[in-house]
Picture 1 (tube, rainbow, N blue to C red):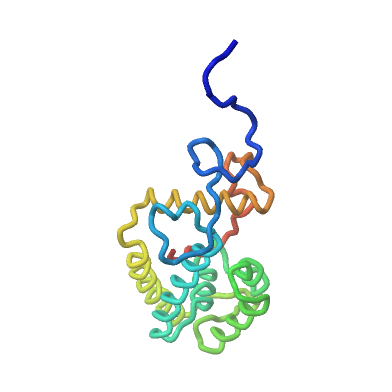
Picture 2 (cartoon, one colour; picture 1 turned 60 degrees about the vertical axis):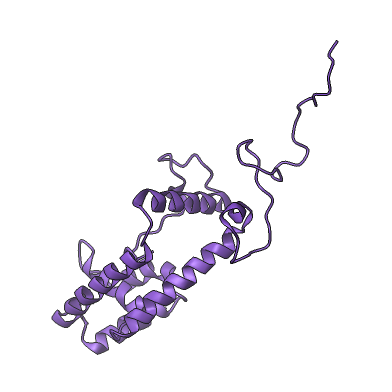
Length: 200
C-alpha cells in the first residue's frame, strides 16, 4: 500500500505542449515578438525569426552590391560560371541556380544581362565563360561579400553558427519528411541544394 500525495506518472495527455525541453516536451508557442527577452525566445515561432534574418541579411547584401552596380543574382551567375569543373551551358546554370532565385526565369535573364554587359561570353558549343571584365567584377564583389559576411557574423563564433544551421536544417528535414535517419546520418541529405556560398 502506498502513501503520500505523489502523482502517478503516465503518458503526457498533451504531447508537444509542455513547458520545458528538459523533459522532452516542447514549449508552448507565443505570438511573434521582436522584443522578446532571452528567456522568452524558446516560445517564439521559427518562421518569423528565420524570415526576419533572411530579409535583413539579403537587404543589407543587395544594398551594398548596388553600390558596385551588380545584383546578387548576377554574382551567383558569375560564381556559377567560375566555380565548376568545366564551362556550363545556359541550361545547366539555370537548372543549378533557379532554386536560389525569385522566379523560374530570373537566372536566364541574368545570363542575358551579363552577356550584353561583356562579363560573360559563349563559345561555339554555347558553353559560358567569364571574360576578363567578368572575372575582375567577380573578384571585386567577392571581396565585398567577405567583408559583409564578417559584419553579419560579428560576435558569433563558428560553433554557434553551425549549431544554428543544424537546427534550421533539422526543421526543414522534419517538415519535408526526410526524418532523422538520412542515408549519411544527416537530415541535410534530402534538403541540400548545390550552389554558390553566400554570406549569412
